[in-house]
Image (cartoon, rainbow over all chains, first blue to last red; front, side, top):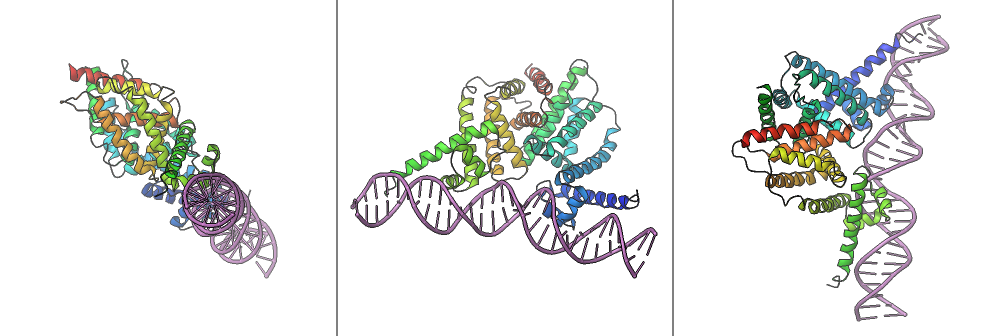
Length: 193
Length: 193
DNA sequence: TCCGTATTGAAGCGGCCGCTACAGAACGAT
DNA sequence: ATCGTTCTGTAGCGGCCGCTTCAATACGGA
């Protein structure tokens, strides 16, 4: 095999494109994902995107994987603390969701899940993996509660619901987030006491 | 004006089309909403849909309005009871969402809100009105709580989040709904006592 | 220098989209 | 019977989509 020297360049260009596309998607959302428009914004052509990724589905999957890596790097700084109660966790995550650095990630992942809910490929496949990852991650962040074990999907549902409603009707959830966090925190206190 | 006799027929046909389309969307979702495919399933042509509705946006808006009317009829039977606490309300609505009659409505409205979150017209406009209606309706169904007034958007967020996650990853929220309802119910008990 | 592979540009294919132009059919009023 | 309005089928427009075909370029090794 003589492509040992050629493959790295090709993979490098592919990674560079995926990285640039990931930054673009984080800035502008998944809305404008046509091959031609995306290529133009990246300074290349649709022909090149297909050349390096093979298909649009593979491109989207690659971009989302890249975004996932960026997020997991950001979340590592947050994951080093001790496990917390569901109410505290929800409060922290909802506050995190208002962080300008985190907000693009929240919007993109909620958009992915929404497209998956509509049955759109390849988002449906990606979403299943993402939901599995997140519920597992949330599970590791929660104090085990033998009496009323909190399903991670419950907290994920709240975060997704708040984010979705906020995207559809900005401002509509201004009071909802704090109330939910405080409500669950009161349950925390009750089960802990 | 000699169209006094003609207009009713036209409006009648328009209403009949909107009604049939509403039933179709409730059965099969908003996914397949191309004019040609929709017309074929309705036994007519895209030409006729544009003739009676003027544009696809007006058609979609009309269909969603018709679905909203159907839902409000169904909900009237549910709205006659006394106001309840947030936890009880959430439990009832989540149970209602598993009702085979209600499920198509939940899926369609969540899909509408998801499309609105992506900025898709005309769903963005419709969603704003729907969210306003629902928060108002939820507000009338809740016992006023001077200490910790529950923002209706909080409950709406949970319902939307659970429905969205269930649509994207069927089965992922099996334990989440009951846990959330019970958690809020425990808060109910605490604020009431 | 010549060759072979990697890369890129230009043009285009077939398909779906919302929508329209045009022509005819149906039908009641005069 | 003629006209006018309402309705509907046919064909097509321009545009975007993912993707492909073909050809030209660049470049490294022999």
